[in-house]
Image 1 (tube, rainbow, N blue to C red):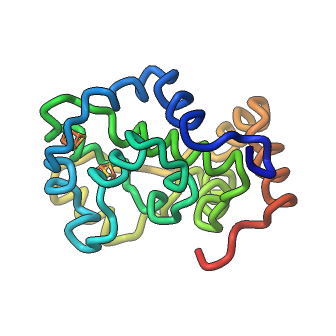
Image 2 (spheres, rainbow, N blue to C red):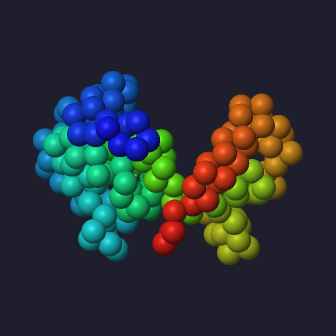
Length: 175
Ligand code: SF4
Ligand code: SF4
């Protein structure tokens, strides 16, 4: 049991397998196609989705503490290429949730949450991005409905949760 009341190892894997997306981990046979398709793995060889899943299969809770998993783009390229349709991005989200529950809160995560609350988006949509969308014939993004979004997030208790995490951890250093 950790300081935060979370059991490690088998308990962690059991928790992942209890989630609907997490169950798909049982189908992984470690072929590595997910890693071959991953745009982050292409530029950073320490980011390896196949290896992340291996850790989970081996019930290694250290995955939840890895800052690396926070660089996942949730682009789903891995899932599309996986012959077993393992829900890799969702499983990585579960690992992040587990990390958050035990106090592993990278500053990037808090920054993204704050950006959603204040800007309605996690990234700044730049002028070149608008132009690229226009060239590709995609519709204009327009301003996000920040006020409505703020109301919904307040109603859901998200604002309170972000503030509580910020006051407890203030974001882990080095991110
Ligand atoms: S592509 Fe699918 S089966 Fe292959 S290692 Fe990745 S998750 Fe496992
Ligand atoms: S969802 Fe994450 S792990 Fe999968 S391909 Fe995209 S960046 Fe890589």
